[in-house]
Length: 135
Image (cartoon, rainbow, N blue to C red):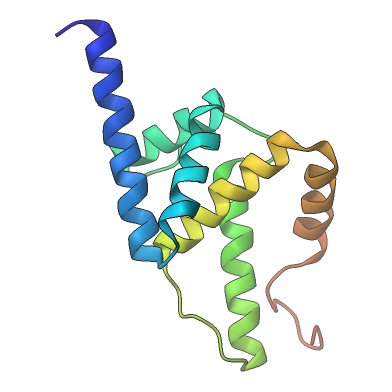
């Protein structure tokens, strides 16, 4: 198998896995197609995604505005915990949804400096309910 064929197979494997994550997260096929297009255009985030696929862990080498994919995922979990503390009806924890949302947020941060600044503010200000009286 040539290097070009191995690369095409790796891309197809990642695209298929992304499609599986999209289905498990209950998102639309169109969402998955668009996310894959954006993901493969970002070498840094694609590499992080491939590493997570292969090892089930975060590489955390690539950063956007000082944030790694793991940082964004932790912020997403904080939001999940905050919703639980508010006793509002929310979708229960879905690992696939959190991963996809984190990828999407990191891509938005990479693609648009204004969004990057907005997410930076949110991540610094919006955390889970770690202390009494937050809500």
